[in-house]
Image (cartoon, rainbow, N blue to C red; front, side, top):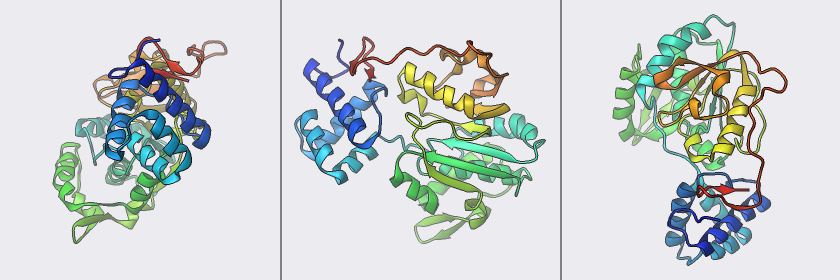
Length: 304
């Protein structure tokens, strides 16, 4: 059993036990996340908390709920900004939204929404394209701390310069300032935008599909998953898409290396935007590797 990067054999065993304990105690399953990323985040937490090993961390996690919440925050993927990768949003605006506009009502799922900037970006884009009152955005994450921030819609005012630049580069046809109110050192998203979004708890690893969506965005999240988990989660997205629904990935991700590549047609390949093909016939669903006993596989990926 090969150790993950920067882990001794004993550390690899302790880390696998820690992740198993988190799953058993709290229901959050990180056992199929990419081991390298987990290792870096957990070792940083060890150092900041004055702990010497993962076994000590496991004891704290099992007996101190507040410490577990801290570790959970460390493991969450919270790097986001409004209109991040503006060329992606420009492609949505030009190639996807006109097709969505033909539908009577548009349902969008922003999965792994973190603190909400991408969900608000999507709401602003749809408003600007004349679709006010004709869409609902469902934004989900497993971390209640970041969901609270997302629901509040309050962001540091120093971020607005880059957000405004991104908005313009994305083809924004209005002024970003029309959608927020400045107050002291923060900006607050306007009620008209907030009311189009429903933020809720959803765990991509353990929860089932999420309604029938016309567009699903899950950007820069799957890169933290092992290949088997990535395939399983994309299967959840496939089941959640309406016929001819659209799906967007992040810049570092690709459908081509997943088991679902034949079931999603590229719309704007460069921007990782796809459209659902016909539902696979019985027996044609992608085969995902079976689960294994807890440990770390030969690629250094934690497996359950």
